[in-house]
Image 1 (spheres, rainbow, N blue to C red):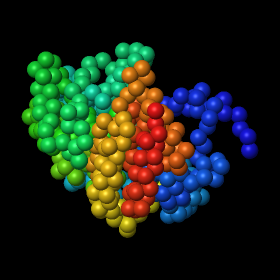
Image 2: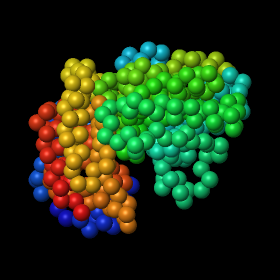
Image 3: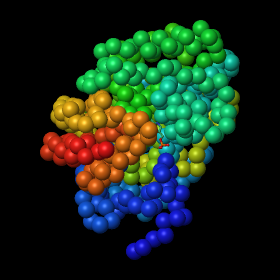
Length: 434
Ligand code: PLP
C-alpha cells in the first residue's frame, strides 16, 4: 500500500527529512515493533515513555473492545459512567495516601494545565487570589499547552509563541556536568532547591501559587534528582504556603521502580500529574490526582453548582478508563514496579559499560530509565543525536533522542538478554557515529 505522506503534519518532527526516508512502525508485540519491511525493532523507549507493560497486551485490547461494544461514549459533564468512577478509586488506592480525588484529561499537557488551574483555584478559594505566579524549572518539560510551555524550561518550545502565561518564573535546573557518570541520584546538588528562596525574596511568597517539577526530568535528557532535592523543595514550598505539583507523566507507572516517584522518594506533593503509562499508551488519557486538602478547599469555597469550571469532552472516556483499569490489573498481577526495580541494576551496568565509547560525555540512570549523552559537534548541536536515532533504528532499536542525548526507557517487562541486546546495539551505533 503506497500512501501519500504529505497531508500528515507530524508533531515534533523534522517532517521533510522524515518523509524523504520514513521510519514506519506497523505492528507491535511484547518488547518489539515491526517496521514496514517486517523487520523487528526492539522498543528501547516504551514507545514514547508510555508502553510500560509491553505491547499487544490482550487484556487491554479486550477491555477496550468490550467497552466500545457496551458503551462507546458517555458525556462527563453532569452525567457519569461507572468505569470513570471505578478508575478514580483504583488510582487513588495505588497512589500515596491522601490523593483521594482524581480529575481526568486526555493527555499530559491537558493534565498539566488542569493542575495549574487547580492551584490557582485553591488559593482563590482560601482568600489568597494574588497567589497567581507559577514556578517551573529550567530544562523542565510539561507538555505543549500554553500553561505547560510557560512553566516549561525548553527555550525552543517557548520561542515564537508570544508572551505565554504572565508571571511565570523558573528555578535553576539540577544538572551538573561535573557529576558525569553518576549512577542513580547524584549525592550533591540538593541546594538547587534553595533557588526557590531567591524567587520568594524577589517576588514575595504571597504572589506564588505553585511550583511544578518533574521528579526526574525526562525529556531534556534524563536528569535524576540530587539526593535530598525533592525533600528540600517540599519543605520550602510548605513553609511558604506554595503548592507543589509533581509532573509524573514519565515517572508514574513504575518507570523508577515504584508506582510513582513520590512513593519512591517519600515526598508527597499536593497534586500529581499522570498520563502516558496510565493506559499503557493504548488510549490517550491524562489525570490529576489531588490531595484531600486541595480538593476540600476548592469544594468548601464553592457555592451551589459547579465547583471547578474546567473539563474536556472526553474526560474519563469509557475506552480510556477500560484500558487504564486493565493496565492496573496487569501492574498488580505481574508486579511490574518490583520487576522494574529488580532489572534496574542490570540496565545501570549495561549503560555505564558504554562510557568508553566514542563521544560519550555522560551516562545517567535511575530505575528503568537511562541516558547516554554525546558530545555535540561544534558546528551542529543535535546532529550527532539525530544520526544516532537513525542508526539505532537501522540496528533494530528504538530510542528517544533529545539534542545529543540518547534516552532509553524500555517497557518494564524487559529481560536481561534484551537489556544486553539494547546495550550491544547502542555500542555498535556509538562506534560508527561520526
Ligand atoms: N509532562 C511530562 C513530564 C512529559 O514528559 C510529557 C510528555 O512527554 C507531558 C507532560 C505531555 O504529555 P502529552 O504529550 O501527553 O501531552
